[in-house]
Image 1 (cartoon, rainbow, N blue to C red):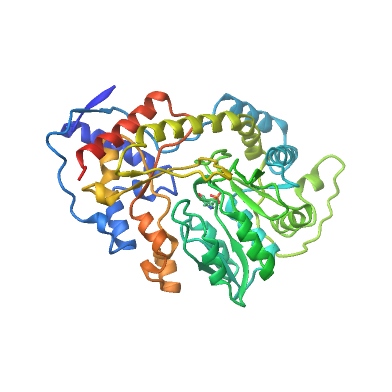
Image 2 (cartoon, rainbow, N blue to C red):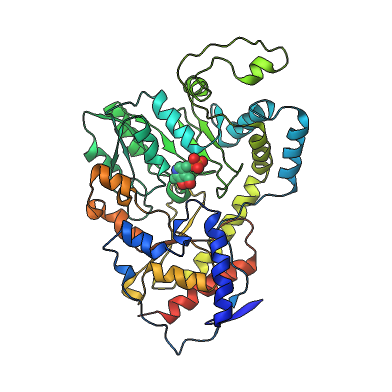
Length: 449
Ligand SMILES: Cc1ncc(COP(=O)(O)O)c(C=O)c1O
């Protein structure tokens, strides 16, 4: 069912209620909020895209908007996940146990990792990895501002300092030259984020780490599965943290996995379960013993067998999911490739992108509206979208603490102001994809300069 566009006042009421549903369900999509302009104004007071927007061209062709709101990123969960979870619930063991072990082995095999540790989030994996590498009070960790807050919050949790450096203009991943320039005597580690699923340029990053004696913790929340120069992300001995949050390429509702060497993960495993020498399965499982000792004041970060059950079912579907993501990316690229106002996402020749996000960047010279109005126009056409990310140095906490000027990271800032993410998930039908491309092309036509 399509709606005539522009919609009547009754249609607009329906659209608003649809858009507020998606806003409640997605934590890293803050700009779905009806208050998004106010929020953006607070975080980015000089954002030019918030200037009062011009009206649409009256002569633009009639456009038919879809009737139901297209969610930005609903989970692709079906009968297989339900069956695996029910099997766990009936098994008599619902916390960390045999299914978590199976999921860890299957995941390690899929990404060719030496070993894997199931956790309750990617955030937990980043935190544990930094602590195991010895990052502590006063140390500096070089990372990107173009990421979700978890990547830097964990550095703060350790009393360490996130040293933001700017990103590369094409991939928006950490710029190795900027890393080199930011190393000081206090630098202890580098935390690259594989932004949107495109691997960061790992060779120069590991070269710097090697020469300067630094640790590296990769944030691969978006990068399952991805390859850099033929190597799967997560296949090395260094720590790499994956996310299974509800919107991710593989979901367990909430959850995460840390990959790396067995020695490193052994220490992370203990620290991730209160610092205890034995987990519950080893104590209460068949042949277990009640005794345990506390080696460190650890955290409660373990994955449950209920989460692992979902993960096992999702892992079996991952290749199908990825194939569909790639088809959608190709359809978007085909539809937008000749549109002057749109800059399309890149996939460098040496990588295989995980296509977690489809990033569109607007070219201000070709459009009479900015990003915020573009998102409002998409919402009015019943298409969900988001922004990844509000650069971390613009957030109130990081502003207060480090007082970076908004322009301190010019590539991150200028790209943030003109970026948005389109729906990209395996549940999208060909019709949904046409609705997205149709809406984007309609907006571009109506607001062309
Ligand atoms: C880049 C990045 N890093 C880390 C995280 C944290 O993942 P989790 O929610 O599994 O802790 C996210 C979540 O959205 C993310 O996008």
